[in-house]
Length: 148
Image 1 (cartoon, rainbow, N blue to C red):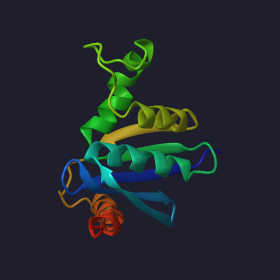
Image 2 (image 1 turned 45 degrees about the horizontal axis):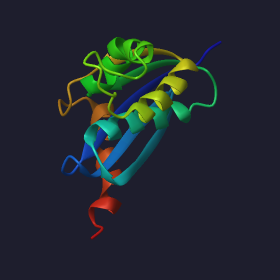
Image 3 (image 1 turned 45 degrees about the vertical axis):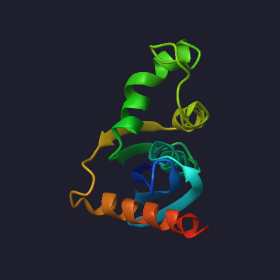
Image 4 (image 1 turned 90 degrees about the horizontal axis):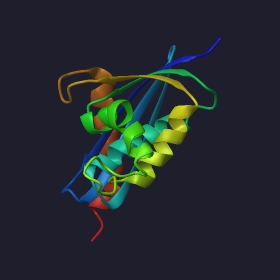
């Protein structure tokens, strides 16, 4: 029987680019795992991708995943754009290189291991697990925000 895992991810950035963080909440039955991290010089979109990559990497086995994100960039990238990017040699419809292609490739590899339903949620709208993911992303950014 394949496990069903609910994941909420979020990315944050102070300046864009600037110090950033990512957060993820994974829930399986009553078990909850919280993950966070960050980078000194990054973008919000990169942090959104890192949240999803790290959340999926944390799963030890193939799972049925409900992945919730407040990033249309992340959701649309995986559900609408990525197949065209791959077919076009990681170029956009305008023949430009796909931004963050190395992260999209990593995410694509992680996605292959699971059966994922992607869900967009409105950010900062009181959804408890989304708010926790947001808090974790901001915590992940803090060590990089305080560097000079």
